[in-house]
Amino acid sequence: MQVTILPGSINGTVTANPSKSAMQRAVAAALLSNGKSIIRNPGLSNDCLAALDVASKLGATINRQQDYIEITSNGIHPVGNEINCGESGLGIRMFTPIASLSAQPITINGHGSLTTRPMNFFEEVLPQVGVKISTLDGKLPLHIQGPLQAKHITIDGSLSSQFLTGLLMAFGAVAADVTITVKDLKSKPYIALTLQLMEQFGVKVSEENFERFSFGKRQAYKAGEYTVEGDWSGAAFLLVAAAVAGKAEVHHLNTQSAQSDKAILEALEKAGAGLMPGVFTVNVEKQHLKAFDFDATDCPDLFPPLVALAANCEGTTKILGVSRLAHKESDRGKTLQEEFGKLGIRIELHGDEMLVHGGTGIKGGTVSSHNDHRIAMACAVAALTAGGPVVIEDAEAINKSYPEFYEHLQKLGGVVKQEGATSQVH
Image (cartoon, rainbow, N blue to C red):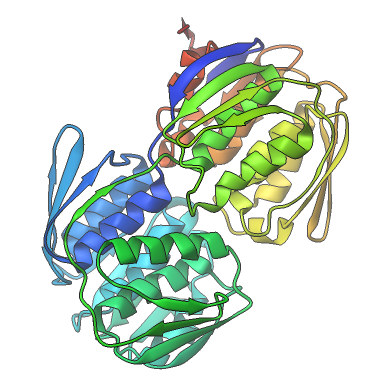
């Protein structure tokens, strides 16, 4: 699908889409619980739908209502011997340890970019907790056979915080008096979100400096109600759009959230945007923007909106954390360099550092999403201040995390042409 975004200012109010990070964790916690859980404000992006499908294959009953989802479960009881995590990196890393609570042999698969991502860290860790595992030269499919036995283990946290999320959630169902020790953990805020959600479903883990996670006496997940908060990862694009091209009020964003991507507020402040956060609302207004320095090591998903912001800032912006980008939906550092280059923005990559030369004027042109949802959204935001229309190829990539993105951009007054049809909402 091709989408063309026309340059123009924005002004309006929109409600952030549900957090896919929180939604997928809530689905996993409901699966691990006994009884009926209700998830309100549920996310329905491709990654969230894949999580619901995995939960049903692992024994839960899913009942979708208009504005909530019921998940009835009594733990892990696989139906069949295969699960498919779609294209969700969090999904596969979180559900693999959870699925291995069962003694049944299970094949775990995915599609798209997930088939090229490295999975060898599973082979390093799962055998230590009694799980047999094999991969296809470190890639999908995974073949596992549990049951997982919770033991004292030490893992390398630089491999994947998402895998630690799965391990913590699986341990929560069976562990007694054991500790997971983690070295060099990246993305600590995502683990804080995991622990917050586990506690909401009745399992408390004590942590010391995000290096030691201790489980006391055995606990059990308890079914309950959970409301999915707004997604800072997706909302970051709307907030940047407002900072570069007008103003916007974005609702349903919890400024006390454990989501790491709320750090976009810090970046906007450094760049000089007009910013007024409330408790569940954020107002952003365009002001004179200047280059900034930002460390995105703990929030690598912010790179695309940060680049769209930096392109509109006077001077050279320095963003750290490029090493976290190689195994995303695309090699995001190189993809951003390539696609923003087509729009006249020069990006340099030096090891872990990205330099964005902003303030030189964004050109119109044709770009490719590389089937990466965040690249598509970053290019759409850049288009608002471009010298001409920006055509985005493979624009449907947004469905992975934020299917309503173009619609929300229109609500703020953006002009979006989808395959020849113009629509604009004020």
